[in-house]
Amino acid sequence: MDQSFSSHQFEHNHSEKDSTRVSVLSEALPYIQKFVGRRIVIKYGGAAMSSETLKKAVFRDIALLTSVGAQPVIVHGGGPQINQWLERFGIKSKFRDGLRVTDEQTMDIVEMVLAGRVNKQIIKGLNQLGAKSVGLSGIDGGLIEGRQLDNGSHGLVGEVAKVHTEVIEPLLSKGYIPVISSVAASKQGDSLNINADTVAGEIAAALGAEKLILLTDILGILRDKSDQTSLIRHIRLQEARELIEKGIVNGGMMPKIGCCIRALAQGVAAAHIIDGRIPHALLLEIFTDAGIGTMITGRG
Image (cartoon, rainbow, N blue to C red; front, side, top):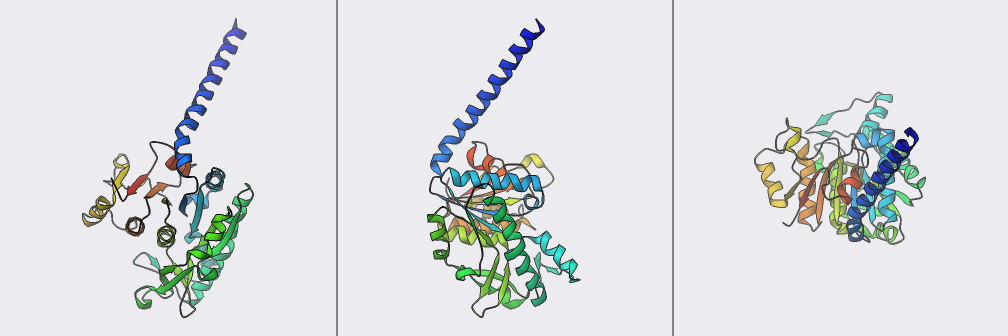
């Protein structure tokens, strides 16, 4: 009798698991069909870049996006890794207005860490899953034309003057994933350190991307920063501007919302701010009805 009950229970649980899998796939199907051939620009950073478990989950999500026909483009920074190497060389980090003041010595480290070590770690992680990826910096092929921010008030910190998409278009057409570090060069040939959110937004706009997704260490946009249940699931472009005007969005969120607004104003269909600390956050946001973060759209 015990064996019969045990067998029945197993079959019941097995059936429930199968039903859940079918339900998940069924829900994902229309989204998968929608994104075939569409560009999705993902800014990769924060905790999702530090935890080995989260790294693997992100790489698997990106590999899956490619396998179902989407065209992901990865843009990354690497603040914590830069800090570690600056400490090794005895160089003190200086910040002004939330941005790293970057002298020539610091820029050498930034370029080495972002365009070298961090970039290649991402490439290796994706390639191990069978996804074909190619590492670039904004300097390669003149991909990102930069200019110094505020006439050099922050040293070699830059902003995006222009994106030359002809550098990455051939890669996308052949099924490669471009992985781009947020280092660029000025017309004068100086290397510049540019905020990775900003780079991601400008590349998304230049590519006419379907989505811009920022992986962060927060749930999304909160109406009340002290209340985790006040997550805003979906707002329109004008509402996002109003949140800034009313001071609901401020501090470290300003650059993120700002780059989303600029991308949407230039034709990107949707921008997402999601919590990269949640395993498989990318798939949950892209392929489920509910999503997990905040989506901003340029239309209703």
